[in-house]
Length: 143
Image (cartoon, rainbow, N blue to C red):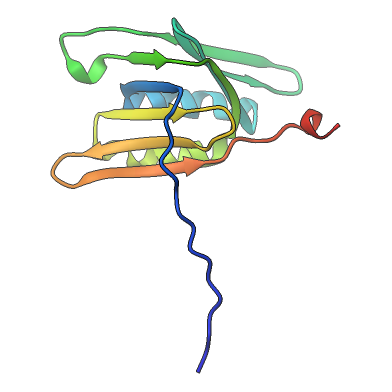
């Protein structure tokens, strides 16, 4: 008889301080376009916009998105911020998450300081597909 040690990892309910609803294709495009410049993307939120930025050895860049209401609900962008967030994440994993974009036209990014990012794809008639990604911890935090 083989006994396998396992650890049950639960995901606690979290009240996220920043919630961004946006088009899944737009999120995928942003992640793919900035990936060649860095392994890490920093997501910064405030009441007016969300910014995705990267810094490489010789280059840096950013994409800034503001709230936008459209007649076509799938193109609308809503940004709800109770508390600003500035966290870094591995682009490798975010690009893997974007493969689920074909399941739905809208995604939700849920962010809070010191909590994993939750990327949620709501799939009609099936529920939701959620991906969690812990933020990168900078070396400055250890000094």
